[in-house]
Amino acid sequence: MSQHKSIPLPILFKTSYPSAIHPSQQRGEGLGPLLTIYRSPSLSLRSSLLLFLVGISFLTPLGYGLYIVYYGYTKHGLAAAVTWGKTWFLISIITFSLSLILILLLRRSTAEVFIYKKGLKLRKSRWSTKIFHWDQLSGISTTIIQENFFNRTLQTRYHATLYPSQGKPVHLDEHLENLPELITRVKAYLYPKLLPKLRTAFKSDERVPFGPIVIQPHSLSIRSQQIPWDQVLRVTVQDARLVIELKNKIYRVPSSVIPNLELLFQLIRDGVHP
Image 1: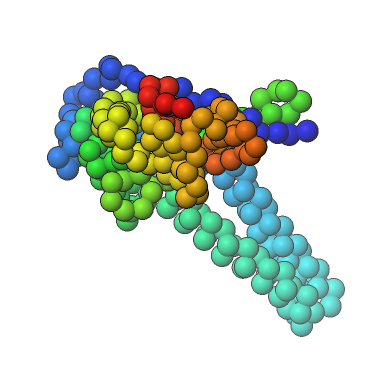
Image 2: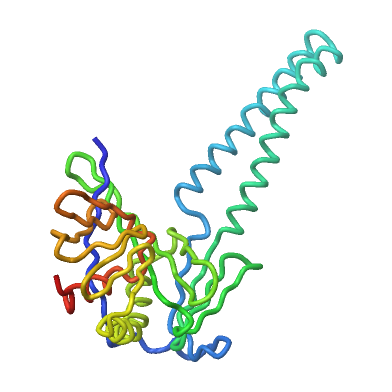
């Protein structure tokens, strides 16, 4: 039976980065030198298979339509050829139109992420570009899912969402090449900047939000319900969810909606007072 297994998310701090791309030393809009680029494949294996199937669905009725027209014309005349063939030609025109629409959508879905020393640039299409300095991002949420079949890993999938200080969350294309490396790099830039501020707020007994979870030294809040830490048995990550086990209840929150999950665990380890 196929099953999904989540992977614990370690705290990722890197202090060294690859040198800027040489010799171009390209620069973004005030973002400094370009370090690297992450792209989604122009055509993934799944997309290629889909295009192949659509192509077959176009060529099959077209080929049969040509055959039936030839047969009808040679055996029964022009009227029979037109009558028998028009339905198949109509089907082939429809599938051809769908193929063109699919190709355009696949071309538009090609995503790029440019990492600069002072920020990043997201390009989802030729007409959609977002630019963020590192201090304009308040966090990142990630989900790592393993698809298993009889204890054998079939596929590992990664999902990531950036949280700007202002505006809506931005989902990263899951088909980006080396997405795990991109996630690690973003965390390596963000977490050392965010952690001191979060620690200061936490030690000052301020409410520190992590999406739907809000923590303080003596309690946490989930779905507007405040829970003292002495009622919490454990906090873990299981099946791509944050699991909060109480003495008489269990809360499960998707990790995909919790930014900076590693920093949440760091603050819990540092300063929770049951």
